[in-house]
Length: 139
Image (cartoon, rainbow, N blue to C red):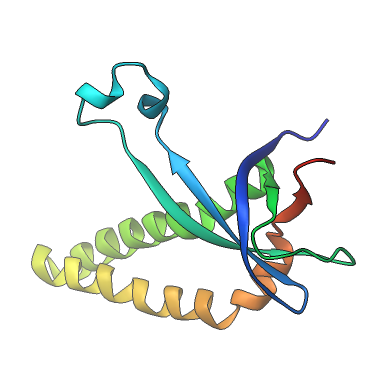
């Protein structure tokens, strides 16, 4: 059985097969009854793009957006895990070659620039793999 992470949202725009859904992402603290007295509770509005497929959605419609947890792990790995490993490897190698920590740090940060450019260039292909689904709330 595939575990899914789901959020309730509202359709804000429809363009072709793309459905733009606004979700409110809340921290675990936001649901606490004492959250109004505490500064750690937070919530953020985000807009996600999902593929509608053959379904047609209307602006203002309540929907569920979801992604399988394994795809969520892949997305986090691409966004944070791989860059961290790349940064550390380049810093250690550059420090060993140059003996200068500031230079090694610059090389490490510089190595992330081509990585994020590649992510941007291949964003459509990555988006095909990391697909967000959208379904009507009442189904």
